[in-house]
Each structure stands twice: as C-alpha cells, then as structure tokens.
Length: 66
Ligand code: SF4
Image 1 (cartoon, helix red, strand yellow):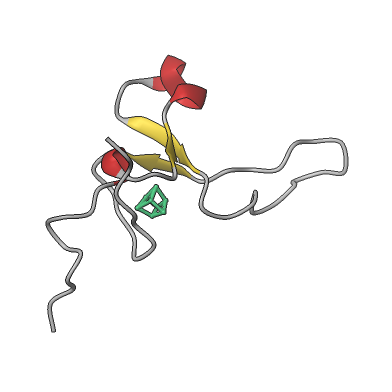
Image 2 (cartoon, rainbow, N blue to C red; image 1 turned 135 degrees about the vertical axis):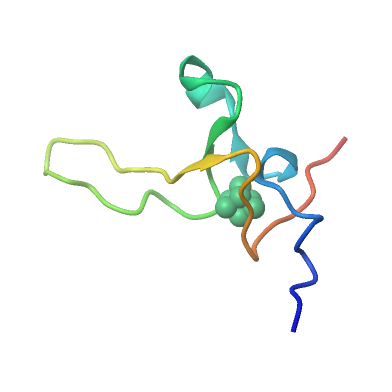
C-alpha cells in the first residue's frame, strides 16, 4: 500500500521545519519542532531536536502557511 504523503510531503515545506536554527549547517538542514527535544545527554546539556534534511518527511507532515 502506497503512503498518501509520499511524493507530496517534505520537511522543507512543513510547518514544523525550523531552518533558521541550523542556517550555519547548510540550506537543506533544519530542526523538526513537532515534538519536544528527545533527549538530554547529560544533566547540564541541552535537549536534542531532531535534525532533518529538507527532502526528508514523516507522517506528521503539515503544509506550512504560504
Ligand atoms: S519530520 Fe515530519 S513533522 Fe518534522 S519537519 Fe519533517 S515532515 Fe514535518
């Protein structure tokens, strides 16, 4: 069964894609802000947001406002 989002969804077009936080890492990389940070390696470190490529996608995709 084909996924309905395949070929349509892309992190780069998603409302949860935060490219501004990763601009120094290249134009195609961003953070996914759909969920809270997923881990905190040590007590004093920051939580980790998933890094995704603009061409990635997942089932939570929602088209960003134009
Ligand atoms: S991983 Fe999913 S929710 Fe996150 S930016 Fe990509 S498509 Fe959107």
